[in-house]
Length: 166
Image 1 (cartoon, rainbow, N blue to C red):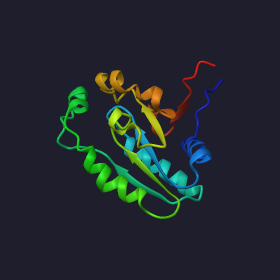
Image 2: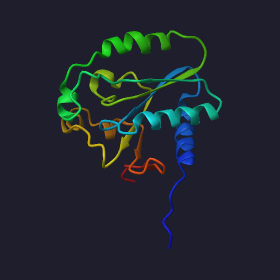
Image 3: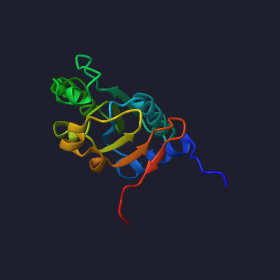
Image 4: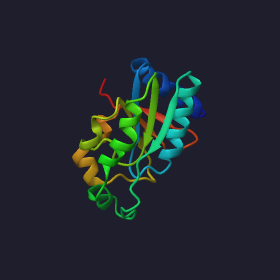
């Protein structure tokens, strides 16, 4: 018997509809977080396109600090990040705009305590190739804070994961 493999577009459209169910109006922020986010920007681009297909105005942004060491996830998490500049230069102008719109942001550590309150909704991407910083997992519990969890081990066939105990 063949295993069922979801189509990427179907998963993205379902995530978009889930987000839009509660955040279809106003100026809303959606984060795509996970590990060091291998494939996070591409996933966020595709999710933004699914939101556009649903008839919404969508902008894109990424959070990445190139000064951080890429080889040590904990050092990256604990390193210097200029989130105040990101809030001032990206978030504030977006929120101050007019009309309904969605800003989709990708990057590592987006559910950390100092950013967590920014997002209306967040996606946690999981991938065996993309280990999250143990310190981030311990400090922020991003998997439990995310609105949706997506297994992105096969980027062409992502799967939404439901981590409830029902």
